[in-house]
Image (cartoon, rainbow, N blue to C red; front, side, top):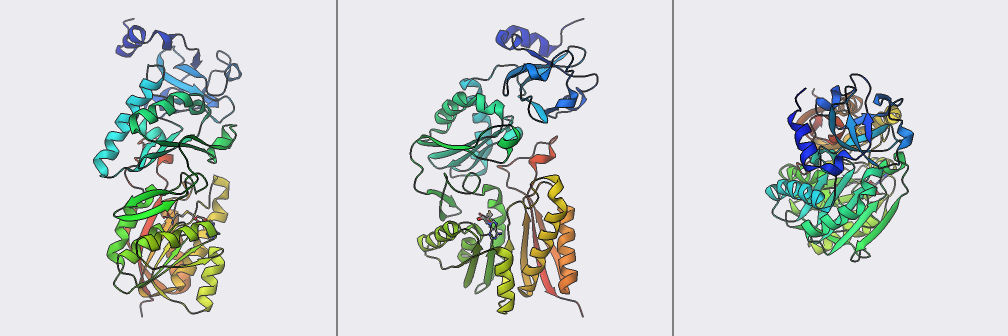
Length: 413
Ligand code: SAH
């Protein structure tokens, strides 16, 4: 049988790849990979031929179909339900390989943004499963979410320093995904200092954000375009409520767009201190209120407070599928409370970053909230994340954020 093109190039320029151990799939289990997906689940592996227990977490393998056709290189984790992730390459990853992938990823972001504040690498979508890299000017934050990427850490570190020319590099290895991979959490400054907050500039607004002990990798670049979209809905003199404000991303944007009063609500005192400092640094005025969002919203309702714009941008309520019913109830309550606080002809920005909550489900939550509060709601914009978080066409998990911009009026008479 004549060799296919990939087999030829595989043999000619990548001898070391040929030496990697094989991971053989069961009959027909290559179909999803051939359709572009990058994950192998443990029940798809022919464990009689290639037992998963043979591999160390993170080991590199050649993935073979049942008929021995080579499908590509992957790294494995025998302890995870996703037991292998394809690297879409025939080259064994090293610093030069990561540097090439990073340059390709960077090419997109440089096209999108004129200043170096963005997500440079978004896992599978950039052909680097399990790797996230965020750029804060001369500082970079790297998140290794899988055993495979953890093992390749020295190459990643060298490539990031080389390609992004950063003078500070932080491994923020404390994401929830690491537990599923059997990895310990740790935060490590591989270069430079991260004791003080670092700068993010978003459309001229300057934010100091905590990278080592902040939320996720420190800043929510995924919402940048949505925050930009907020400006047109903030009328001069408006009163704005930013719920789950973190360091003031939405709130400061509203203040800059002409709001007369902005109230940022968060349960973290540190986040609110930074929000206040960020407002000062930008010569803007905000107020802050610390507490559980649900309690604060209820108090505000009791105080008969009213706002022209309310943003609810909570952390993911449904981290796992089984959390969904509880999460939907929480989103529903939150949206109802927010609607009660809106003046007639107000704007509600309702967000969810739970992958398990679909856009339709969030829409239903909003509709139910309107019904319960006797309001009339119009959805003006259905948005997702910014394009520095590109979606992998075969992996729906790479799209998670929903942000609905709604107009809320009193019930139609
Ligand atoms: N809106 C922010 C991101 C929000 S991140 C932005 O655009 O940058 C989620 C925030 O919710 C965190 O700051 C966290 O401290 C806060 N938080 C989590 N649970 C909370 C609760 N029950 N009540 C109030 N704030 C909460």
